[in-house]
Length: 363
Image (cartoon, rainbow, N blue to C red; front, side, top):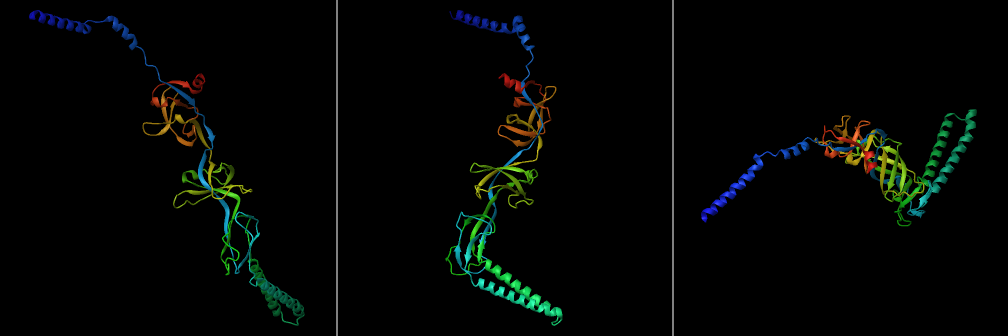
């Protein structure tokens, strides 16, 4: 019984070995014939969508954050002695040029003017009375020179007295808005000479001030149009009035001022503003943002398809970055830029080209 079992096991193993070997040793002509036609098939070309590049003159827009700044701002101070007796302005009040905003005590200024006027009248009468005598030779000609000099000195004294009297009335140097009034009537019983009365701000025109880097400075010209968007949501047109020729020592940026009309005074001083400046026009091509790619060397550019339908890489410079598209320079006019599939092909690879507009219409 044991010998029979052993013989049966040996027979089963030998049969299995023969069956496995038959798959390698015996040729299967029918299976090989079915495989060979598939191997003869060529790999299909990778399909990419392209769009023709069109060079146009484009004026890029440079947007910078800044602030509004009043064109004129001054602290009005007293230039003569006296006590403040009258204050005619308050904060937020609009004043006109030469309007009286404060009055000081007289301090005998009117009396000094009256004395100077009397002296002028005296010197003029003396000059007129003796002029005829000098003309007839009754008096020496040298007296005429002395009399004329005395008359002119009296006139000068009168001018000084009137100027001192006028300083007793503090006037606005230009039209604007009073933003601060630190002085008070009767707040001090001493002389107000040199003390600040009020702060005056001229709101028309209003300036939008930004700082520009040295790389962008060359494209900004005085007189160019600019659009100013205020933090309040208001957009105001303006013109570049000033471009600094000296950089800030701390930031190495250049001050640029944009002037805006503000006759109604609605634009306040010192609020945040966003200034959009139009730079010098450049020849550029508009492409979708997604068309940008990076070469194996790390350069930023786009992939194009040549006349032989082979892929090539073109490095570019960014002229302006928009929300969905980009303006680029460095692409030849009429070049077929790959706008879909550019990240799945390599330089020198032959591809199947499909027009992006045609493909989009088909979808």
